Image 1 (tube, helix red, strand yellow):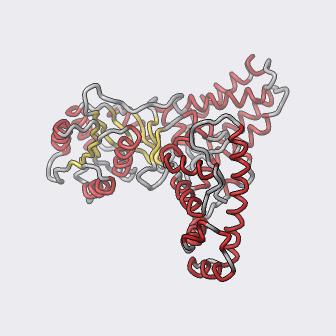
Image 2 (cartoon, rainbow, N blue to C red):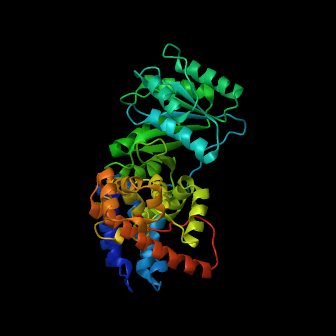
Image 3 (cartoon, one colour):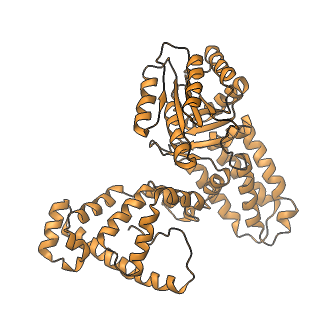
Length: 450
């Protein structure tokens, strides 16, 4: 995950100062030296680092810290606030035109992920904001770019407007907007051509499309893994085209995260979305305060809750709660619940969103084997309907049959049955406690998968 190295360095630096009852200027100086090194190692722009350290230092040796009862905590609060401000302060929302359709130009260099990001953004607009987007194939130069967008459109069941590769991109954009008005689309996403580097021909074509369409947003798609190059590209596009926001792709890769911390400061244009994986739902609105919180090891509970709200079936959750209350939870329900939890994404990534996760030694090295969940599913699927309803029916011959059918061992079958029984006991206790307490709405994870 991005920021891992930076997060480790900052968290260990913060740990040294956290509980201090008195903080001297020398302590602050030492901490700022560590912070400076951590940011530079994360490939953050040198000028950005210099300004950040200066702001934090000035506040950290000021009255608000020195007279505080908990100066260590106060400094952490300052670092968190300044880190949030560095990345833009508040979440920058996507534009909505007063008269639809809202036109978005997707621009950037070749290979940054424009076409895939266009598909992901259209998917997000439909799922999260209940919009009706139209994708426009405006890259007529790259072989298979049009085909790629059309394939994504089929995959998402999303309309794609294309006039082939013999019509100029400006004319394609003009006709696409007319078509969007006719078919009542409220968003038009124009996938434009990229080059291997910023050149005059590329910029002139983009300026022509901009002049004709008068877009509400010009999103620059940049690859976070290119580090400082991403910042230079952003600066160049902004100077020549006047971008309105940035979409950072591959922020889930082995990247130092410096681009995310530098782009906003250098271009003064917000990061609007971040790509965190290959799947078509792996695009999220960028929240500076949440990202700062994650970097400093304070978790990201809000994103976790949002993931649960979009991925968890509410009806099934209510049904499950009822079964827990009446102690009628079966292995079939367990199987269903595993599927729901898997929808939230990789379990090791979810763990890192928990507050205090940064303090758990070796968490970054934890590899939660998704195959393990697959093994559990295979074992349960090898059981008969009666066995899933009444695990007490299990005798040694049934267990051998289940082990053979699932390709697992009898020991694994026994382990699963024991875990299931333990979990049911725990649920009984929890529901007893919950009935005494005042009921609160919302989905609750009733158990840990393992």
